[in-house]
Image (cartoon, rainbow, N blue to C red; front, side, top):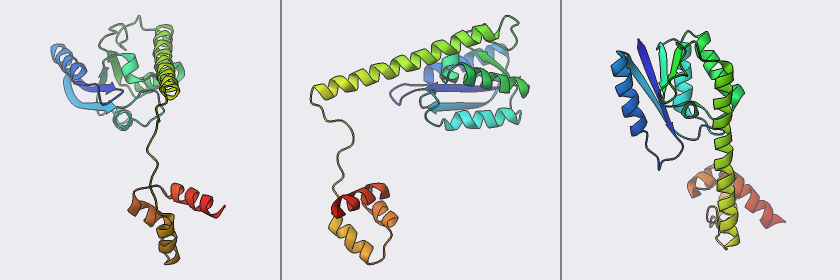
Length: 195
């Protein structure tokens, strides 16, 4: 059976090696041929694009593999019940099976898999994402209270030079690119200078 592996971690501080090694070993023991692996290092919340996830969905739609093997449902998606079930239904409509390594009951070949079980697990994954977000916001509030300055350092831009370059006909976008700042920042600073 042509098998694809999908692995995901949320941050660069985390590693996918543990997931990948065990998924490869499992697939080999099953006698499955691993045809490709998709690895994302990004949150599964749906707020950021997951390029390898998108490539995997594209390849699944073209039936480039028969089965998708992933570590657990929350590694596949933390986008909530509707979106997660939607992905699994899409696989089914493309005649692509799926299997969770750590949740063996989540397998298209297992008759016990129901929408209720999937709904509960997807809701738990979404709740975990919300909990992580709440913890992060609490940490940011605590840091601000302690006087820590957060965010990028303010860009040091000589607006007089920017105006001289603009007067010579250079585009704001070109100037911004050259200075390593956004054109929006230059527009804002120019507006503040003229106010």
